[in-house]
Image (tube, rainbow, N blue to C red; front, side, top):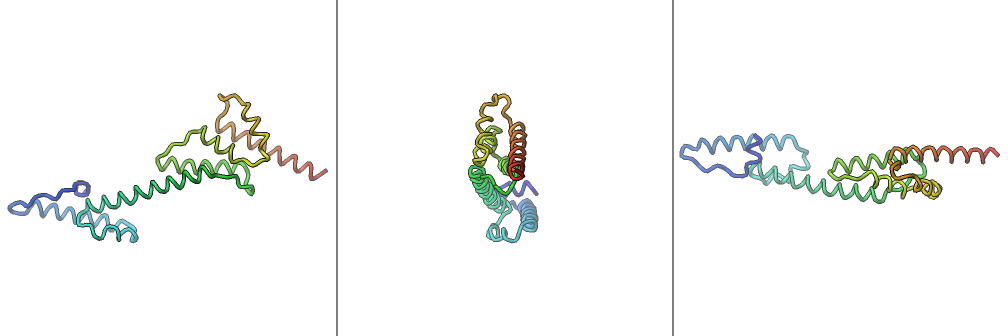
Length: 168
């Protein structure tokens, strides 16, 4: 069946029509497999196709455009990622990591250095002194795990200071 889908050329008419009939039967079967396994919304795109190979080309072009578009959307979300004050730092980093994983699944690689830069840039002002301290960490020790750990520790200290001030 797969041969029929990827083979774009219809065989020549032979004298007894056996080869052409066999190909037509395989192509019809391939078209049936394709159409019965797709979402109804996509049927509109392949209704005018006469061969399974045409259906395949049409579907491939639709999904490639969709993947490219969603990659652009994901990249836009990455570069505009902001800290949500209603969430803690662990959730913030987790949300960004989830976004990075989606970008990787779409075929684009984002380096750990880029992820760390995005985290640091997205931090609210209250972490300003942390950023200065982080910049003094030797580059050999600047990794995502270390950044996450230090940010969580810093957030915990900030909460403790705030509670102590409220209790005073």
